[in-house]
Image (cartoon, rainbow, N blue to C red; front, side):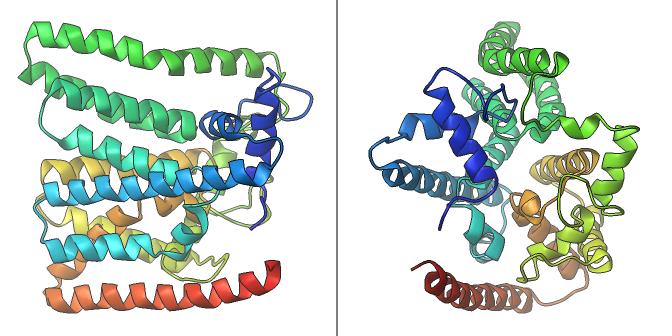
Length: 352
């Protein structure tokens, strides 16, 4: 399929990186750098399609590795294998995931970095686990700024490691933390300079320049109003489209119902440590997206497995047989696959 919307933005910036400029057209940009730099690295001037294809395959590989970390995390929670596979299945064939995991959007990289971060932030206290957690956190921020809010989980883990480790280990981890944080600190300095001097040609921060920006963005993130930078209402009403395979589907009441379901599933049972961290990460990310005034359905995609697990816990509390729940999840997965074949047929007829 041809490049669309943000893909063109990333591709243009990637081309200009090779000219020594982090520009969109004529001025600097503060768009997150991970995708443009990968595009620049894979750029092929003679046959651009080769570089773009390689990049899309890399995104798909990242997504697959993300599912591996999701599997490791769910297994770590001591869930039954059938349930783990059902959650992975319904997440892997989700129509939004099929659309975006192999495109030049952040979702493939975020699938890898988010679940890698969650896994290493909940596993045993070891120096190598802490370092990997920090590396995934840095990649998250440089892929989508909103994930900086997960720094609160980093702080909690610092306290956890402080209680369980020696002073020598803490000192070693502090040095690694400073070293690993340098790319983010340098990038933040660059962003501050560009935004402060109003040099940016395309920016994620322009949405905070309106009158009463926080209130405006929260309204847009909740889906009460349509943000001026998009062509339809997003935020909370878009949440239902994660589960309903209809392009651009919006429904406020159904979305709130799904959110209540998954929250109730977590909050009505004693939570293991991993579940506590996962729920905290989900809530923090959702709040971050609301405050940023965004919430496209694809923004919730990375958290889908956590939503499904919460809904499973809620249905389990209603004493519904596990086999019924799992069979329902597999049926939904099959419906998604059948619908995807239908869409593939329409798309192929359009572009070939």
